[in-house]
Image (cartoon, rainbow, N blue to C red; front, top):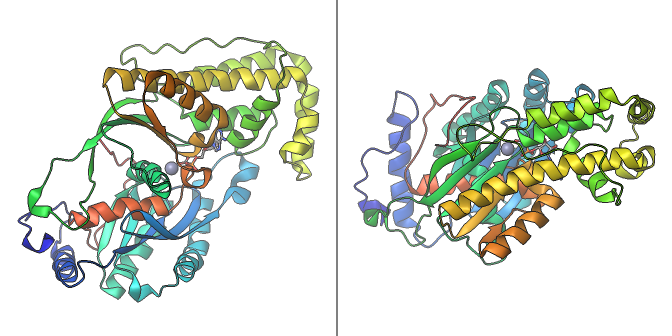
Length: 415
Ligand code: KG4
Ligand code: ZN
């Protein structure tokens, strides 16, 4: 039982360990009294432009999940404005947490711990969630569990698999691909800790970073290309659908595989984005349709059905060629890593994991090579708090708590 744990020095955040120490004692007592009851964690996420809260039982059963997106606030700027993001989080955090508790049929006092994202992300945005999480933890005398946002994205895959009664086998390679990140990890089981044997064995993972983008994240490239083509923000979902609508018109330009010197598992997307920009600049025939789409966006007509008639076959073929290049790069490097490391599964998470062509290509390639591939649903691919509560559970079981000195870490590393 955890009661008998001899793990005396769990990771602590900040200097004063008293609050975290007390939290540990309370957790041990709680576990001793409630061995068969589930642990319900309130997750809070505010690292970028979604204010989210969720309640997850035992790290895998989603009792509620609420996401307040700020897309409408940032849309007219074509990207996330950090100051506006912080202000929106401040407005949303209390109602979002209340809604998550209401949907789970719980009161604040029923929560066993609070898990909060403390990085990576925008400092001002992170601080809203952290401050609220710390305050709740102190007022309710509940443990506070700091969560790395990237670890949340890994757990999103496990949450989804759990719904289908499955657990991805480790070792795995995990591609996290979003508007802020494009990174490849090897995920393995953390060393067995027999003294921590608990009724539901904690699946704690360890990570090794094996590749990352040298410049833009893939989602960022989608957003920038959509912006320069007059297709609005965020770019991923609309480009995804327009690429699928391109018929067999030959591409107006060809984008070859991106070569990166050094680590062959590193990514690079800024060259591709610039190639699209130069192509569009060199071909004035794109200008009138870009202008007509920008006018449509200004009228609030940003839906796929409204923008599709304003796209020439040449534009659709350009979008398809751009997407082919992004998908090819993500899939090739991830599959090369999977083969090199002889893993059991391939995990894909983050906003761009919602891309239909990426999903189909991964399925096809993984099947051909005998790997199992796992994605979260679209709702769990983009930022949410269920993944934060899930990741928090395993840190909770491993006694990893924070005290009131917990701070935001904009460039927090997972490995
Ligand atoms: O994970 P996420 O919600 O936030 C970040 O942590 O960045 O990801 C948002 C990103 C945006 O860049 C968006 O354009 C991209 O994910 N995205 C997509 C799709 N849906 C969202 N990219 C490609 N295809 C999609 N279907
Ligand atoms: Zn994210």
